[in-house]
Structure formats: C-alpha cells, structure tokens
Length: 216
Image: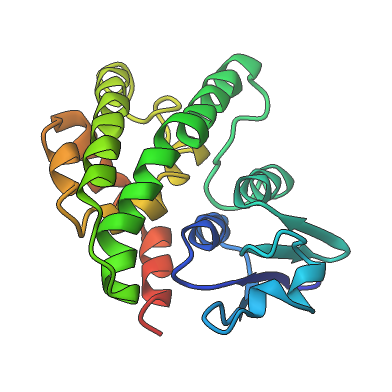
C-alpha cells in the first residue's frame, strides 16, 4: 500500500488536525513540508493539489483531497478498523450526535477561536504585530458563549460526541493548543468541565506526537 502524503506546515492548525487523525489511527504517512513563508502553497506543484492555495493537501493513492475536515472524515471512515474509533459507523443516532458537534466546532467554535489564536499568538510571535484589543474583546465574548454551551454538554457526557473521544473532540485540538499559550486560556479555566476536557484531550499520545512535529 502506498504511503499517504500530507502536504502542509507543522504550524498550520488545519494540517495539525489531519496529522492528529493519522496518529490516532496509527497509520504511516509522509509529511511534506510546504514553505509558506516563501509562498510555496500559492504555486505549482502545490496549487494542483489545492486550487485555493491553502494547506493541507492530502494524497492516498490516487485520491487527492483538500480541506482538513473532509480529510479527517475520510481517514476516520476509510480506516475505521484501525487505531482509535473516531466515528461510530453502525449507530446512526450516535453518529448524528457526533455529526452535530462536528458542525458546532466548524461553525460556532472555530471562527472566534481561530481569530483569537491569530491575534494573541501568531501575529505577535511570527509577524511582530501587536494584538488588536477590539478584535480580541469581540472574539473572547463570542467564544465565551460557545464554551458555556460546551460546559453544559460536558455535564451530560464525558466528551462532546458522547462517552468516547471522537472527531468532534479532536477537531478542537489545534486551536486549543495555541490558545492555552495566550491570555484567552482564562476563558477555559473558568469552566471546570471544559477545563478538564481540554486537559484530557490535550494529553493524548497521538496529539503529543503532533506537538513534537513543531520542534523538529
């Protein structure tokens, strides 16, 4: 079987989402580093893999995909029998609940969380640009609302999608990692169930392998 390929950058939150799934599934893959600083993601040969010029891109044999959440869902489904069971294939109701929280992450959580990660971590650290207080305040307020809903959900089940760790939890890990290094960490620490959930999923061995890639 040909080794799967992930074309991305270790610091890309979207690429981290894909490598996290591959490590959870204990699958072999080749990580091809894309030099984004020099615009490698905006020209050939990368642009033929993702016409939008954004990382990651993914190859599994003759299958080529882009958009990280589409990639993770493919891997979780195609390799369901390998490693951690990240979806529940034979129970439509349980899978519907997981699907619900996948949608919540993508459409409610991701926007304020990613904006805060950019403002509070990436812009100051990598570009020397100070955070915009108005953007930070606005998105902290939005994220607080989402996390309040998470706190209630996590009083009903151990994880967002149910009693087992699934894609619905995993998709949060990249933004969580960077937000925990910023003042936005307080938003999570104020909520005991959310705080415990963050500590739990952030300590998973597969995720620690993703973090190790940042140091290589």
